[in-house]
Length: 244
Image (cartoon, rainbow, N blue to C red; front, top):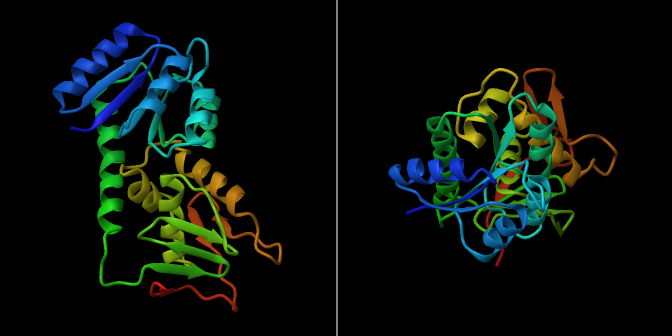
């Protein structure tokens, strides 16, 4: 049974989520302020966290910052309807997805299942297989099985979402990848109007990887349609086996 932690000061909402998610086969625990939520999240092993932005003691953004410094547990941020800035900030800090209040519990369940399904698939793909396990594109080296990313030999700390995005872009380096394909593959759901989730995750990935040695950008935006990981003549994309 997958464990969900709900961090929200609305006790009635937590009780509703506990009842609804439990009926969907999840084990649910709750915390009602930022300090309690952070302590609970760090003290237990949860498959996913539902985190409200407006929390007493420590707000949701600070909770998320602390979590991301020590854990890659997927997080869905709850924001007030119309607060676009909160959604963008949450994604920039490291949230996997967001949902505006008030929301339909069925939609939350759909988002949770999509994220957990993606993680399960990544774990299955990470099992030993008769295919190469290291992907190199220029100075970026990705170890698929161990989920390690090296930039010029130095490790880069990526969230699960950022790792999935980078893997898709590297596998298709030099080729255009649509936003719709990235949303479906990485977020595990269909795109919806004005959805900026992928764009914010790409922005975070760019900041962590930086520019290439020659100063050119690594991930090029194809206006309003998608992205492309830029190749150079010296660094073609390719796979190679694990070195022992």
